Amino acid sequence: MTIYADNHPLLIKTLKERERISDEWLLNRLHHLLPALMNKYNMDMWIIVGREYNEDPISYTLLPSVIDSSRRITIFAFVKGEDDQLNRFVIHPNKQFEPFYTCYENLNGDSPFDTLRNLINTYHPQTIGINKSAHFAFCDGLSHSYYRELVDSIGEKHSSKLISSQELALDWLQLRTESELDTYKELAAITREIVKRAFSNEVISPYVTTTQDVVDWVRQYVLDLGLKTSFYPTVDIQRKGALSDRLEGTILPGDIVHLDFGIEYLGLCTDTQQLAYVLHSEEKEVPVGLADALNTANLFEDIFFYTCNHGMTGNEIFTKVMSKAKSEGIKAMLYSHPIGNHCHAAGPLIGLYDKQEPLPVRGELPVQNNTCYALEFNIRHYIPEWNQDIPIYLEESICFRENKMQYLTNRQTEFFLIENKK
Image (cartoon, rainbow, N blue to C red):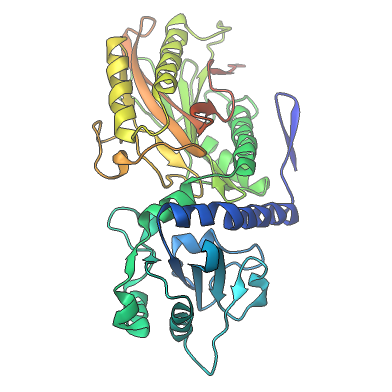
């Protein structure tokens, strides 16, 4: 299916083409990214145990397109050999894992963990990473029962070498290849085009359409495109004189319509928040006060972009951005997060909606090149035409690349306009 963004066609790829791309990405990551990360963290061996219907989150990022689950149990074992060459094994009989991995089959009726012990005895690793973490769900995928079976099978000699693979797993999840980053722009453009169509009279008829109607349309349209939403979308409205910032119900002229939405495509997720204004019958553009509010939100984005530097932690960025915004007289909240294989993905947090302060552990992670984020925030601005302060909620998909923040698609600088045709 083809959709159009700024009159340029965006072709939604066929299933076969998606699988080809995903497999190319996986091989590239296994050949180039993973060996570098194993060396970076001095990890001699990394074990990921996948269990059917209770998968390790990392397992999904390692499966070739022809394999959709661990099928009982699948053990991935990455181990350094001679000259630090990285060997990639999978303990599973399915030969479709090749050429991504070498199938290391169970012999003489051995259990997969017995086979793993034989593999360890062959290579004698000094450090063995396993997916356990007190702070990051992505890195805590080894179940308790399989941990006990692993320890019992490999014995005290090797179990004493087990360490958390947390840092390695975080980088595996958050770092994107050049091809993935280029494709992320396409994902962002598709997302924006869906928003553009949702914020049109094709979907919204003032006095008739409800916020839930728009949610239902977005979900159905995404499904019809052969895609998935990265989370359940939300639509709400801001209205002059309302006692609440975010209302649900029938959309009326003079309303600001706010959509929070993202897609999942080619194993990657987007997350965006955009705004539309419903014109009164006599209006041709948004009130000046609303335009000024959006300009202030864009200024906050500029502050964020100018502040971010390679190696800064999420907490450092949060503190400096909020301090600069305050000096500019901007009332803001900042709660940005990584995007990638997950919508709220691995990497540094830059504030939380309910904790506008430096954050332990996740806020202490540094921003690295080739990582992606949702720049999520709001500012409060006085609207003279409404005689009240209102929040402007925005969220843009961005990436840190070549030592600077970059938008994955053009940011919102004007409200989408919905006509009142009554």
